[in-house]
Structure formats: structure tokens, C-alpha cells
Image (cartoon, rainbow, N blue to C red; front, side, top):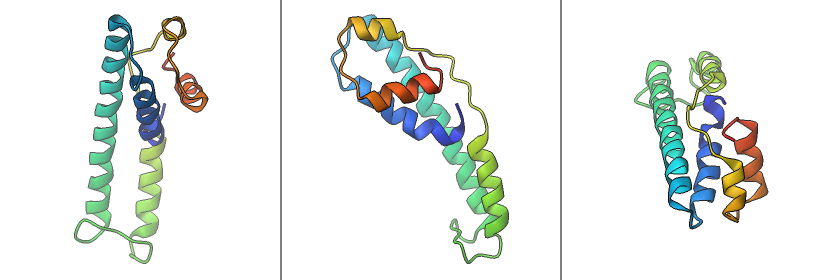
Length: 114
């Protein structure tokens, strides 16, 4: 998955954790969710660093002279790959009759968390 997908992935995991889950499955999901949240925090710190580097007073806007350079650097940051070691066992999720939005399942599958 990429930095640009982290926020949506975290939202999908929150969707799953709104359900009552068996203990072992809940633990598996919480560990993976925590790992995604930490990666998102690291991404946000890097984004804030870019804003400080290219902007003025902790902000940047489209009319700023450094905007084009910032956009290139930010796009590169968004595209960087992130490795999340944790995985979710989809078979256990199904066996537990967990109700999850199809979009959440599709996203988690697409980024390789199943």
C-alpha cells in the first residue's frame, strides 16, 4: 500500500472494529490497525515537514511561489510504499459473521491486508 492509501485503510479497519469480535480475531485486527495508524502518523509528520520546508509559517497555498515544488514532493510522498506486517484472516472474519461494508473489504483486499 502507499502513504496515500493509509487514511482510507484506517477508516476501513475502524469499520471492522465497530463489530463485536472473538478475542483472538479482535487482537489480530487491533495490532494491524495500530500499525496502520503509526504509519499514518509518520506520513503526517513528513507532510508537515514538507509544508514547513516549502511554505511560510506552517502553511502553503496554491499562490505560494514554492507551490509547484511542494506538489511534486508531496506527490512523491503519497506514492511511497508502506509495508504493514500485520494481516487479517478473512476466513475468520467471515466465520465470525462480521458485518463489514463491501468498500472496506475491497480496499483491505486491494492493499494486501487479507
